[in-house]
Length: 559
Image (tube, rainbow, N blue to C red; front, side, top):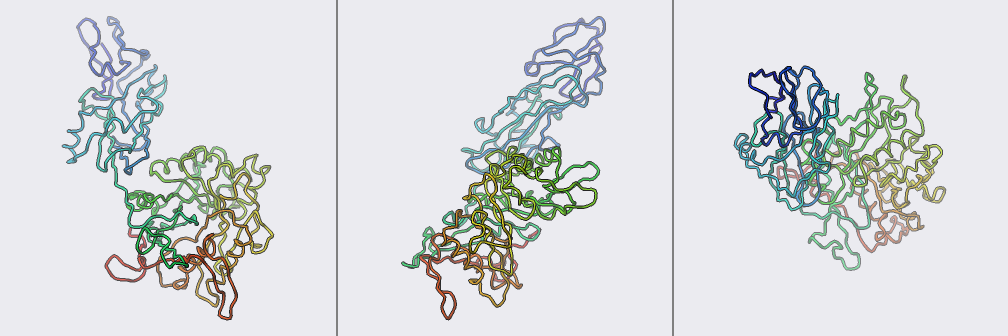
Protein backbone atom coordinates (compact mmCIF):
# COMPACT_ATOMS: atom_id res chain seq x y z
CA UNK A 1 0.00 0.00 0.00
CA UNK A 2 1.22 3.51 -0.84
CA UNK A 3 0.13 6.92 0.36
CA UNK A 4 0.50 9.52 -2.36
CA UNK A 5 -0.23 13.23 -2.07
CA UNK A 6 -1.95 14.42 -5.25
CA UNK A 7 -1.78 18.00 -6.43
CA UNK A 8 -4.68 17.20 -8.67
CA UNK A 9 -7.08 16.61 -5.81
CA UNK A 10 -5.18 18.28 -3.02
CA UNK A 11 -5.64 15.21 -0.87
CA UNK A 12 -3.54 12.29 0.24
CA UNK A 13 -4.95 8.91 -0.74
CA UNK A 14 -4.15 5.33 0.12
CA UNK A 15 -3.33 3.06 -2.81
CA UNK A 16 -2.97 -0.71 -2.67
CA UNK A 17 -1.18 -2.53 -5.45
CA UNK A 18 0.10 -5.98 -6.19
CA UNK A 19 2.64 -4.64 -8.58
CA UNK A 20 6.21 -4.71 -7.49
CA UNK A 21 7.66 -1.45 -6.26
CA UNK A 22 9.32 0.72 -8.86
CA UNK A 23 10.49 4.25 -9.36
CA UNK A 24 7.91 7.08 -9.48
CA UNK A 25 7.52 8.60 -12.95
CA UNK A 26 9.33 11.85 -13.55
CA UNK A 27 6.98 14.09 -15.48
CA UNK A 28 6.93 17.89 -15.43
CA UNK A 29 5.38 17.93 -11.96
CA UNK A 30 7.92 15.59 -10.52
CA UNK A 31 10.68 17.77 -11.88
CA UNK A 32 9.31 20.81 -10.10
CA UNK A 33 8.51 19.10 -6.83
CA UNK A 34 11.31 18.16 -4.55
CA UNK A 35 9.24 15.77 -2.50
CA UNK A 36 6.61 13.07 -2.71
CA UNK A 37 4.35 11.88 0.05
CA UNK A 38 5.01 8.13 -0.05
CA UNK A 39 4.86 5.43 2.44
CA UNK A 40 4.53 1.72 1.85
CA UNK A 41 3.37 -1.52 3.41
CA UNK A 42 6.11 -3.75 4.76
CA UNK A 43 6.73 -5.18 1.32
CA UNK A 44 7.15 -1.77 -0.28
CA UNK A 45 10.22 0.37 -0.57
CA UNK A 46 10.05 4.05 0.37
CA UNK A 47 10.46 6.27 -2.68
CA UNK A 48 11.35 9.96 -2.63
CA UNK A 49 12.25 12.62 -5.22
CA UNK A 50 14.10 14.81 -2.76
CA UNK A 51 13.78 16.36 0.61
CA UNK A 52 12.90 14.32 3.62
CA UNK A 53 10.25 11.65 3.81
CA UNK A 54 7.45 12.54 6.25
CA UNK A 55 7.18 10.50 9.38
CA UNK A 56 4.67 7.67 9.35
CA UNK A 57 1.41 9.45 10.12
CA UNK A 58 -2.06 9.32 8.61
CA UNK A 59 -2.22 11.55 5.51
CA UNK A 60 -5.74 10.87 4.38
CA UNK A 61 -7.01 14.35 5.36
CA UNK A 62 -4.13 16.59 4.36
CA UNK A 63 -5.06 19.22 1.79
CA UNK A 64 -2.77 21.74 0.16
CA UNK A 65 -3.27 24.94 -1.82
CA UNK A 66 -1.33 27.86 -3.21
CA UNK A 67 -2.56 31.06 -1.59
CA UNK A 68 -2.12 34.81 -1.70
CA UNK A 69 -2.03 37.16 1.27
CA UNK A 70 -4.16 39.60 -0.73
CA UNK A 71 -7.22 37.44 -1.43
CA UNK A 72 -8.88 34.37 0.02
CA UNK A 73 -9.76 32.88 -3.37
CA UNK A 74 -7.63 32.05 -6.41
CA UNK A 75 -7.94 35.50 -8.04
CA UNK A 76 -5.78 38.49 -7.12
CA UNK A 77 -6.42 41.87 -8.74
CA UNK A 78 -3.44 44.13 -9.31
CA UNK A 79 -4.02 47.75 -10.33
CA UNK A 80 -1.29 50.02 -11.65
CA UNK A 81 -0.93 53.19 -13.66
CA UNK A 82 0.97 53.35 -16.93
CA UNK A 83 4.52 54.60 -16.67
CA UNK A 84 6.67 53.64 -13.73
CA UNK A 85 6.05 52.11 -10.34
CA UNK A 86 5.46 48.62 -9.03
CA UNK A 87 3.10 46.62 -6.85
CA UNK A 88 4.17 43.71 -4.65
CA UNK A 89 1.97 40.78 -3.64
CA UNK A 90 2.75 37.86 -1.32
CA UNK A 91 2.06 34.18 -1.93
CA UNK A 92 2.60 31.00 0.06
CA UNK A 93 1.66 27.33 0.24
CA UNK A 94 -0.52 25.97 3.00
CA UNK A 95 -1.55 22.49 4.15
CA UNK A 96 -4.57 21.69 6.26
CA UNK A 97 -2.23 19.83 8.61
CA UNK A 98 1.44 20.27 9.33
CA UNK A 99 3.68 17.65 7.66
CA UNK A 100 6.19 15.85 9.82
CA UNK A 101 9.13 16.52 7.53
CA UNK A 102 10.71 19.45 5.72
CA UNK A 103 9.20 19.98 2.26
CA UNK A 104 9.74 22.29 -0.70
CA UNK A 105 7.80 23.12 -3.85
CA UNK A 106 8.67 25.27 -6.87
CA UNK A 107 6.10 27.65 -8.32
CA UNK A 108 6.17 28.64 -12.00
CA UNK A 109 4.26 30.62 -14.65
CA UNK A 110 2.01 28.55 -16.93
CA UNK A 111 1.21 30.77 -19.91
CA UNK A 112 -0.84 28.00 -21.52
CA UNK A 113 -3.70 28.83 -19.14
CA UNK A 114 -4.37 32.19 -20.82
CA UNK A 115 -6.77 31.00 -23.52
CA UNK A 116 -8.78 28.93 -21.09
CA UNK A 117 -9.08 31.86 -18.70
CA UNK A 118 -10.27 34.25 -21.41
CA UNK A 119 -12.81 31.77 -22.72
CA UNK A 120 -14.18 30.83 -19.30
CA UNK A 121 -14.48 34.46 -18.17
CA UNK A 122 -15.41 36.09 -21.49
CA UNK A 123 -12.33 38.35 -21.34
CA UNK A 124 -9.57 39.36 -23.70
CA UNK A 125 -6.57 39.59 -21.41
CA UNK A 126 -2.96 39.56 -22.55
CA UNK A 127 -0.27 37.47 -20.88
CA UNK A 128 1.88 39.76 -18.79
CA UNK A 129 5.35 40.09 -20.39
CA UNK A 130 8.17 38.39 -18.55
CA UNK A 131 10.01 41.68 -18.06
CA UNK A 132 7.13 43.10 -16.02
CA UNK A 133 7.31 40.74 -13.07
CA UNK A 134 9.94 39.10 -10.93
CA UNK A 135 10.35 37.13 -7.71
CA UNK A 136 12.67 39.00 -5.31
CA UNK A 137 12.75 36.04 -2.90
CA UNK A 138 12.75 33.26 -5.47
CA UNK A 139 9.87 30.84 -6.23
CA UNK A 140 10.70 27.90 -3.98
CA UNK A 141 8.14 27.39 -1.22
CA UNK A 142 9.63 25.58 1.75
CA UNK A 143 7.79 24.20 4.75
CA UNK A 144 9.68 23.29 7.86
CA UNK A 145 8.64 20.31 9.90
CA UNK A 146 5.49 20.76 11.95
CA UNK A 147 4.54 23.94 10.02
CA UNK A 148 1.32 24.12 8.02
CA UNK A 149 2.40 26.92 5.72
CA UNK A 150 5.48 28.09 3.95
CA UNK A 151 7.15 31.43 4.45
CA UNK A 152 5.80 34.29 2.36
CA UNK A 153 7.32 34.89 -1.05
CA UNK A 154 6.94 38.06 -3.07
CA UNK A 155 5.94 38.57 -6.66
CA UNK A 156 6.54 42.08 -7.95
CA UNK A 157 4.62 43.62 -10.85
CA UNK A 158 6.18 46.53 -12.76
CA UNK A 159 4.27 48.95 -14.96
CA UNK A 160 7.21 50.22 -16.99
CA UNK A 161 6.62 50.11 -20.77
CA UNK A 162 3.17 48.53 -20.36
CA UNK A 163 0.35 49.94 -22.44
CA UNK A 164 -3.00 50.50 -20.68
CA UNK A 165 -5.07 47.32 -20.76
CA UNK A 166 -5.94 44.08 -19.01
CA UNK A 167 -3.26 41.45 -18.38
CA UNK A 168 -3.12 37.95 -16.94
CA UNK A 169 -0.45 35.97 -15.09
CA UNK A 170 -1.03 32.44 -13.69
CA UNK A 171 1.34 31.37 -10.93
CA UNK A 172 1.05 27.64 -10.32
CA UNK A 173 2.53 24.55 -8.73
CA UNK A 174 0.44 22.21 -10.91
CA UNK A 175 1.56 20.21 -13.90
CA UNK A 176 1.71 21.88 -17.28
CA UNK A 177 -1.76 22.75 -18.51
CA UNK A 178 -2.98 21.20 -15.28
CA UNK A 179 -6.46 21.83 -13.88
CA UNK A 180 -5.68 20.95 -10.29
CA UNK A 181 -7.96 22.87 -7.96
CA UNK A 182 -6.39 25.54 -5.75
CA UNK A 183 -2.89 25.06 -7.13
CA UNK A 184 -2.87 28.24 -9.22
CA UNK A 185 -3.15 31.92 -8.38
CA UNK A 186 -4.67 33.94 -11.21
CA UNK A 187 -3.25 37.46 -11.16
CA UNK A 188 -5.51 39.90 -12.99
CA UNK A 189 -3.48 43.02 -13.77
CA UNK A 190 -5.15 46.25 -14.85
CA UNK A 191 -3.01 49.05 -16.25
CA UNK A 192 -4.88 52.34 -16.40
CA UNK A 193 -3.98 55.37 -18.47
CA UNK A 194 -2.91 58.48 -16.62
CA UNK A 195 -5.59 61.12 -16.22
CA UNK A 196 -3.64 64.34 -16.33
CA UNK A 197 -6.69 66.46 -16.99
CA UNK A 198 -6.64 70.03 -18.18
CA UNK A 199 -4.73 71.62 -15.34
CA UNK A 200 -1.14 71.37 -14.21
CA UNK A 201 -0.41 70.98 -10.49
CA UNK A 202 1.20 74.11 -9.12
CA UNK A 203 4.55 73.48 -7.45
CA UNK A 204 5.77 77.09 -7.31
CA UNK A 205 6.15 79.17 -4.15
CA UNK A 206 3.50 77.44 -2.04
CA UNK A 207 3.42 73.79 -0.96
CA UNK A 208 -0.27 73.38 -0.15
CA UNK A 209 -1.50 70.72 2.27
CA UNK A 210 -5.18 69.78 2.22
CA UNK A 211 -7.53 67.67 4.29
CA UNK A 212 -10.64 66.14 2.77
CA UNK A 213 -13.48 64.50 4.71
CA UNK A 214 -14.67 61.42 2.81
CA UNK A 215 -17.79 61.33 5.01
CA UNK A 216 -18.91 64.45 3.09
CA UNK A 217 -17.01 64.80 -0.18
CA UNK A 218 -15.61 62.99 -3.16
CA UNK A 219 -11.82 63.45 -3.30
CA UNK A 220 -12.15 64.69 -6.90
CA UNK A 221 -13.18 68.00 -5.35
CA UNK A 222 -9.46 68.74 -5.03
CA UNK A 223 -8.92 68.85 -8.77
CA UNK A 224 -11.25 71.84 -9.08
CA UNK A 225 -9.34 73.95 -6.60
CA UNK A 226 -7.93 76.30 -9.25
CA UNK A 227 -5.52 79.18 -8.82
CA UNK A 228 -4.10 81.77 -11.21
CA UNK A 229 -1.26 84.25 -10.84
CA UNK A 230 -1.26 87.53 -12.74
CA UNK A 231 1.93 89.48 -13.28
CA UNK A 232 0.96 92.88 -11.90
CA UNK A 233 3.56 94.65 -14.05
CA UNK A 234 2.66 93.15 -17.44
CA UNK A 235 -0.93 92.02 -16.77
CA UNK A 236 -0.07 88.66 -18.27
CA UNK A 237 -0.63 85.27 -16.75
CA UNK A 238 2.46 84.16 -14.85
CA UNK A 239 1.40 80.54 -15.45
CA UNK A 240 1.19 80.61 -19.19
CA UNK A 241 0.65 76.94 -20.10
CA UNK A 242 -3.08 77.73 -20.45
CA UNK A 243 -4.71 80.82 -21.89
CA UNK A 244 -6.68 81.31 -18.68
CA UNK A 245 -3.53 80.91 -16.56
CA UNK A 246 -5.13 78.36 -14.22
CA UNK A 247 -3.42 75.60 -12.26
CA UNK A 248 -4.82 73.16 -9.76
CA UNK A 249 -3.34 73.25 -6.24
CA UNK A 250 -2.81 70.90 -3.31
CA UNK A 251 0.50 69.02 -3.09
CA UNK A 252 -0.55 66.69 -0.26
CA UNK A 253 -4.14 65.54 0.26
CA UNK A 254 -4.88 63.87 3.60
CA UNK A 255 -8.05 61.81 3.55
CA UNK A 256 -10.06 61.37 6.71
CA UNK A 257 -11.63 59.87 8.68
CA UNK A 258 -9.48 56.85 9.60
CA UNK A 259 -9.31 56.00 13.29
CA UNK A 260 -7.48 53.86 15.78
CA UNK A 261 -10.11 51.66 17.42
CA UNK A 262 -9.87 49.31 20.37
CA UNK A 263 -11.05 45.71 20.59
CA UNK A 264 -11.65 45.03 24.29
CA UNK A 265 -11.92 41.27 23.80
CA UNK A 266 -8.50 40.87 22.17
CA UNK A 267 -6.80 44.01 23.43
CA UNK A 268 -5.83 44.94 19.88
CA UNK A 269 -5.49 48.42 18.46
CA UNK A 270 -7.45 48.21 15.22
CA UNK A 271 -7.36 50.34 12.11
CA UNK A 272 -10.93 51.36 11.30
CA UNK A 273 -11.34 52.76 7.81
CA UNK A 274 -15.06 53.35 8.16
CA UNK A 275 -17.63 52.79 5.43
CA UNK A 276 -16.94 55.99 3.49
CA UNK A 277 -13.17 55.64 3.35
CA UNK A 278 -13.49 51.99 2.40
CA UNK A 279 -15.84 52.91 -0.44
CA UNK A 280 -13.36 55.48 -1.74
CA UNK A 281 -10.48 53.01 -1.57
CA UNK A 282 -12.52 50.30 -3.24
CA UNK A 283 -13.14 52.77 -6.10
CA UNK A 284 -9.65 54.19 -6.08
CA UNK A 285 -9.30 54.45 -9.84
CA UNK A 286 -12.20 56.89 -9.88
CA UNK A 287 -11.54 58.97 -6.78
CA UNK A 288 -7.80 58.96 -6.05
CA UNK A 289 -5.68 57.95 -9.05
CA UNK A 290 -6.54 61.13 -11.04
CA UNK A 291 -5.17 63.17 -8.13
CA UNK A 292 -1.97 61.13 -7.98
CA UNK A 293 -1.51 61.25 -11.74
CA UNK A 294 -0.80 64.97 -11.52
CA UNK A 295 1.90 64.47 -8.90
CA UNK A 296 -0.14 64.87 -5.72
CA UNK A 297 0.57 62.73 -2.69
CA UNK A 298 -2.61 61.19 -1.31
CA UNK A 299 -2.36 59.96 2.29
CA UNK A 300 -4.70 58.76 5.00
CA UNK A 301 -5.05 60.83 8.16
CA UNK A 302 -4.92 58.69 11.32
CA UNK A 303 -6.65 59.92 14.48
CA UNK A 304 -8.30 58.64 17.64
CA UNK A 305 -11.56 56.75 17.76
CA UNK A 306 -12.90 57.98 21.12
CA UNK A 307 -12.19 54.71 22.93
CA UNK A 308 -9.56 55.99 25.35
CA UNK A 309 -6.79 54.27 23.40
CA UNK A 310 -4.67 56.48 21.19
CA UNK A 311 -1.17 57.03 19.92
CA UNK A 312 0.05 58.02 23.39
CA UNK A 313 -0.83 54.90 25.38
CA UNK A 314 -0.10 51.93 23.13
CA UNK A 315 1.93 48.92 24.21
CA UNK A 316 4.86 47.79 22.09
CA UNK A 317 2.83 44.80 20.87
CA UNK A 318 -0.10 47.04 19.90
CA UNK A 319 2.26 49.31 17.97
CA UNK A 320 3.67 46.41 15.94
CA UNK A 321 0.17 45.13 15.19
CA UNK A 322 -1.30 48.53 14.28
CA UNK A 323 1.62 49.50 12.06
CA UNK A 324 1.25 46.23 10.15
CA UNK A 325 -2.43 47.00 9.53
CA UNK A 326 -1.66 50.49 8.25
CA UNK A 327 1.12 49.20 6.01
CA UNK A 328 -1.24 46.65 4.47
CA UNK A 329 -3.71 49.39 3.50
CA UNK A 330 -1.02 51.73 2.16
CA UNK A 331 0.54 48.94 0.12
CA UNK A 332 -2.67 47.34 -1.14
CA UNK A 333 -4.12 50.63 -2.39
CA UNK A 334 -0.83 52.24 -3.47
CA UNK A 335 -1.39 55.30 -1.28
CA UNK A 336 1.43 57.74 -0.61
CA UNK A 337 1.66 57.63 3.16
CA UNK A 338 0.09 58.58 6.48
CA UNK A 339 -0.57 61.69 8.51
CA UNK A 340 -0.73 61.41 12.31
CA UNK A 341 -3.17 63.76 14.03
CA UNK A 342 -3.72 62.70 17.62
CA UNK A 343 -7.16 64.09 18.37
CA UNK A 344 -10.43 62.57 19.57
CA UNK A 345 -8.74 59.68 21.38
CA UNK A 346 -10.62 60.51 24.64
CA UNK A 347 -7.67 59.68 26.88
CA UNK A 348 -8.44 59.05 30.55
CA UNK A 349 -11.37 56.67 30.16
CA UNK A 350 -11.79 54.18 32.98
CA UNK A 351 -9.88 50.98 32.42
CA UNK A 352 -7.59 52.44 29.74
CA UNK A 353 -3.87 53.07 30.32
CA UNK A 354 -2.60 56.55 31.07
CA UNK A 355 -0.82 58.63 28.45
CA UNK A 356 2.94 58.33 28.33
CA UNK A 357 5.67 60.16 26.42
CA UNK A 358 7.29 57.22 24.62
CA UNK A 359 4.38 55.46 22.89
CA UNK A 360 3.77 58.08 20.19
CA UNK A 361 7.46 58.46 19.25
CA UNK A 362 7.79 54.66 19.07
CA UNK A 363 4.75 54.51 16.81
CA UNK A 364 6.14 57.13 14.42
CA UNK A 365 9.53 55.42 14.31
CA UNK A 366 7.94 52.01 13.68
CA UNK A 367 5.75 53.44 10.92
CA UNK A 368 8.74 54.96 9.14
CA UNK A 369 10.67 51.71 9.36
CA UNK A 370 7.70 49.73 8.06
CA UNK A 371 6.83 52.05 5.16
CA UNK A 372 10.40 52.89 4.16
CA UNK A 373 11.50 56.16 2.65
CA UNK A 374 9.31 55.91 -0.44
CA UNK A 375 6.16 56.75 1.53
CA UNK A 376 5.33 59.91 3.48
CA UNK A 377 5.09 60.00 7.25
CA UNK A 378 3.74 63.39 8.38
CA UNK A 379 2.60 64.83 11.70
CA UNK A 380 0.05 67.41 12.78
CA UNK A 381 1.52 69.22 15.78
CA UNK A 382 -1.42 69.61 18.12
CA UNK A 383 -1.89 69.96 21.86
CA UNK A 384 -0.52 67.64 24.57
CA UNK A 385 0.29 64.53 22.47
CA UNK A 386 3.12 66.32 20.63
CA UNK A 387 4.17 69.06 23.04
CA UNK A 388 7.10 67.00 24.40
CA UNK A 389 8.58 66.04 21.00
CA UNK A 390 11.39 68.55 21.53
CA UNK A 391 12.68 66.59 24.53
CA UNK A 392 14.52 63.39 23.60
CA UNK A 393 14.79 62.57 27.29
CA UNK A 394 11.01 62.28 27.42
CA UNK A 395 10.69 60.44 24.09
CA UNK A 396 13.02 57.61 25.08
CA UNK A 397 15.92 58.97 23.05
CA UNK A 398 13.91 59.10 19.80
CA UNK A 399 14.40 62.22 17.67
CA UNK A 400 10.92 62.25 16.24
CA UNK A 401 11.82 64.69 13.45
CA UNK A 402 14.29 62.19 11.99
CA UNK A 403 11.37 59.93 11.09
CA UNK A 404 9.10 62.60 9.58
CA UNK A 405 8.92 63.99 6.08
CA UNK A 406 6.87 67.01 7.21
CA UNK A 407 5.04 68.37 10.21
CA UNK A 408 2.66 71.30 10.54
CA UNK A 409 0.44 73.18 12.95
CA UNK A 410 -3.04 71.85 13.65
CA UNK A 411 -4.29 75.05 15.25
CA UNK A 412 -7.26 76.78 13.66
CA UNK A 413 -9.47 79.55 14.99
CA UNK A 414 -12.42 80.79 12.97
CA UNK A 415 -12.76 83.98 15.04
CA UNK A 416 -9.17 85.19 15.54
CA UNK A 417 -6.39 86.26 13.20
CA UNK A 418 -4.54 83.40 11.56
CA UNK A 419 -2.51 81.62 14.25
CA UNK A 420 1.19 81.59 13.31
CA UNK A 421 2.63 78.65 15.25
CA UNK A 422 6.37 79.18 14.87
CA UNK A 423 8.43 77.06 17.30
CA UNK A 424 11.69 78.70 16.19
CA UNK A 425 10.54 82.30 16.82
CA UNK A 426 8.40 81.88 19.89
CA UNK A 427 7.91 85.17 21.70
CA UNK A 428 8.42 87.35 18.63
CA UNK A 429 5.74 89.67 17.31
CA UNK A 430 2.95 88.06 15.27
CA UNK A 431 3.82 84.56 16.52
CA UNK A 432 0.88 82.95 18.35
CA UNK A 433 0.91 83.34 22.12
CA UNK A 434 -2.17 81.11 22.45
CA UNK A 435 -0.29 78.08 21.13
CA UNK A 436 3.38 78.18 22.16
CA UNK A 437 5.38 75.26 20.75
CA UNK A 438 8.99 74.11 20.76
CA UNK A 439 10.86 72.72 17.73
CA UNK A 440 10.42 68.99 17.16
CA UNK A 441 13.80 67.35 17.81
CA UNK A 442 15.59 66.46 14.59
CA UNK A 443 13.15 68.26 12.27
CA UNK A 444 14.47 70.71 9.66
CA UNK A 445 12.54 74.04 9.93
CA UNK A 446 12.03 73.87 6.15
CA UNK A 447 9.79 70.84 6.77
CA UNK A 448 7.46 72.50 9.28
CA UNK A 449 4.31 74.41 8.32
CA UNK A 450 3.62 77.23 10.75
CA UNK A 451 0.27 78.32 9.34
CA UNK A 452 -3.07 76.51 9.07
CA UNK A 453 -5.61 78.61 7.14
CA UNK A 454 -9.15 78.62 8.56
CA UNK A 455 -12.42 79.54 6.86
CA UNK A 456 -13.95 82.70 8.28
CA UNK A 457 -17.66 83.38 8.63
CA UNK A 458 -19.36 86.54 7.45
CA UNK A 459 -18.87 89.27 10.03
CA UNK A 460 -17.57 92.77 10.76
CA UNK A 461 -13.97 91.98 9.80
CA UNK A 462 -12.66 91.66 6.26
CA UNK A 463 -10.56 88.67 5.26
CA UNK A 464 -7.56 90.97 4.98
CA UNK A 465 -7.94 91.85 8.65
CA UNK A 466 -7.41 88.21 9.62
CA UNK A 467 -4.37 87.67 7.39
CA UNK A 468 -2.08 90.71 7.66
CA UNK A 469 -0.01 89.10 10.44
CA UNK A 470 1.23 86.56 7.88
CA UNK A 471 2.71 89.33 5.76
CA UNK A 472 4.49 91.07 8.65
CA UNK A 473 5.77 87.76 10.01
CA UNK A 474 7.17 86.91 6.58
CA UNK A 475 8.65 90.39 6.14
CA UNK A 476 10.47 89.99 9.48
CA UNK A 477 12.40 87.09 7.93
CA UNK A 478 10.76 84.39 10.06
CA UNK A 479 9.37 82.23 7.27
CA UNK A 480 11.51 79.07 6.80
CA UNK A 481 9.25 76.79 4.75
CA UNK A 482 6.75 76.99 1.90
CA UNK A 483 4.25 74.67 3.61
CA UNK A 484 0.77 76.19 3.88
CA UNK A 485 -2.00 74.08 5.42
CA UNK A 486 -5.75 74.61 4.99
CA UNK A 487 -8.85 73.73 6.96
CA UNK A 488 -10.77 70.70 5.67
CA UNK A 489 -11.83 71.38 2.08
CA UNK A 490 -15.33 72.48 1.12
CA UNK A 491 -17.26 73.40 -1.97
CA UNK A 492 -19.86 76.05 -2.78
CA UNK A 493 -22.44 75.72 -0.03
CA UNK A 494 -25.20 77.98 1.25
CA UNK A 495 -23.96 78.64 4.77
CA UNK A 496 -22.26 81.28 6.90
CA UNK A 497 -18.95 80.84 5.03
CA UNK A 498 -20.47 81.17 1.56
CA UNK A 499 -19.04 84.54 0.53
CA UNK A 500 -15.78 84.42 2.48
CA UNK A 501 -14.11 81.00 2.39
CA UNK A 502 -12.62 81.25 -1.09
CA UNK A 503 -11.03 84.58 -0.15
CA UNK A 504 -9.08 82.76 2.59
CA UNK A 505 -7.22 80.78 -0.08
CA UNK A 506 -6.58 83.80 -2.28
CA UNK A 507 -5.41 86.14 0.48
CA UNK A 508 -3.49 83.37 2.21
CA UNK A 509 -1.49 82.73 -0.96
CA UNK A 510 -0.90 86.45 -1.54
CA UNK A 511 0.45 87.14 1.97
CA UNK A 512 2.37 83.87 2.34
CA UNK A 513 4.10 83.47 -1.04
CA UNK A 514 7.52 85.09 -1.37
CA UNK A 515 6.42 86.66 -4.65
CA UNK A 516 3.10 87.86 -3.25
CA UNK A 517 2.47 91.05 -1.30
CA UNK A 518 5.57 93.12 -0.58
CA UNK A 519 4.02 96.14 1.15
CA UNK A 520 0.87 96.93 3.11
CA UNK A 521 -0.12 100.50 3.88
CA UNK A 522 -3.03 101.70 5.98
CA UNK A 523 -5.39 104.03 4.17
CA UNK A 524 -8.75 105.60 5.08
CA UNK A 525 -10.35 102.83 3.01
CA UNK A 526 -8.44 99.99 4.65
CA UNK A 527 -5.09 98.26 3.92
CA UNK A 528 -3.50 98.95 0.54
CA UNK A 529 -1.54 95.94 -0.75
CA UNK A 530 1.45 96.25 -3.05
CA UNK A 531 2.27 93.10 -4.97
CA UNK A 532 4.20 92.07 -8.06
CA UNK A 533 1.80 89.19 -8.57
CA UNK A 534 -1.90 88.91 -8.02
CA UNK A 535 -3.02 85.46 -6.85
CA UNK A 536 -6.63 84.60 -7.57
CA UNK A 537 -8.72 81.55 -6.57
CA UNK A 538 -11.23 80.52 -9.23
CA UNK A 539 -14.44 78.80 -8.07
CA UNK A 540 -16.17 78.77 -11.47
CA UNK A 541 -15.87 75.00 -11.97
CA UNK A 542 -17.20 74.36 -8.46
CA UNK A 543 -20.39 76.09 -9.54
CA UNK A 544 -20.86 74.07 -12.75
CA UNK A 545 -23.10 71.11 -11.95
CA UNK A 546 -23.11 67.80 -13.86
CA UNK A 547 -26.55 68.58 -15.28
CA UNK A 548 -25.15 71.62 -17.09
CA UNK A 549 -26.58 74.17 -14.72
CA UNK A 550 -24.97 76.19 -11.97
CA UNK A 551 -25.46 75.98 -8.25
CA UNK A 552 -24.28 74.51 -4.99
CA UNK A 553 -23.19 71.21 -3.44
CA UNK A 554 -21.01 69.91 -6.27
CA UNK A 555 -18.71 67.03 -5.25
CA UNK A 556 -20.73 65.95 -2.25
CA UNK A 557 -20.26 62.19 -1.91
CA UNK A 558 -22.19 60.23 -4.55
CA UNK A 559 -22.52 56.91 -2.71
